[in-house]
Image (cartoon, rainbow, N blue to C red):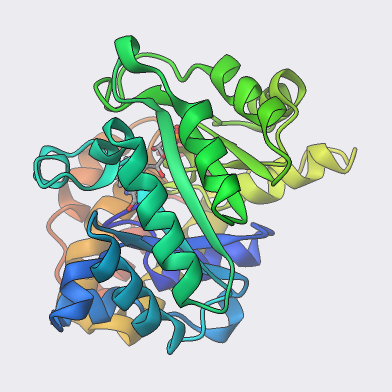
Length: 307
Ligand SMILES: Cc1cc2nc3c(=O)[nH]c(=O)nc-3n(C[C@H](O)[C@H](O)[C@H](O)COP(=O)(O)O)c2cc1C
């Protein structure tokens, strides 16, 4: 998730058992034309592997060139973003807008698969809108052109993040393809992951928003999949420890000022749901250093129920 799942967060997710992580989406044009921000998004640590670096763009030649640049960073695979619904992206014909042009999708797949020696995967949505649902068509083209796996988010691009994800379309894609299919949309608990797998037969599930402030969700989902007892939810001391570790990792990654800005939202997510945490969240939303965050967290009572 852009702006959320940078290298530090991905590492925390991996440590909690998440078996596969993806980078935030990176602009193919930005890479080819040497944007500094694009380069920054490519950084990852060895401990995050297996990792896929995700590209967005719509020009087959530029995507192929950007993919060659990505290969030099040695990711385990490259993922293509054919699902982003943000206007800034779709108005350039990128992200989810590509679902409206199946033949262009084919040319992109063909160009990138021919230009890199590592697996390429793609993330798509149900379709552009309810009148043009075509996930099966796009996923089948991907398979024909040598794409290694397809992730399907069960919403249309027009839906953005509203409504519920339609898991039945994920099931249809799964039954049409032989390459692995990853189901995505509204998996927010071990039970939901199990349900999506049961209803669609997917090979894996992708978890997005529910992981914000909750890297433990991966441990919880895995426990259920392995038939183990559900782990106890993290108590406040463990949450505080995770927040500070996240902060430290972010500081190493981008310096304290930028880390503090990013941590404001992460901390709000980590503390979401704690009774009485709203007032504290306001203060935390203003933090500008690690020591400030530490002092505020220390001022929290030790027991969850006292917040
Ligand atoms: C803030 C935000 C940023 C996102 N950025 C990306 C992105 O860079 N690449 C991508 O493939 N999906 C991105 N997504 C979509 C999610 O990966 C996921 O498909 C979507 O949120 C549905 O899954 P969920 O219900 O588990 O969150 C983003 C979603 C959000 C909310």
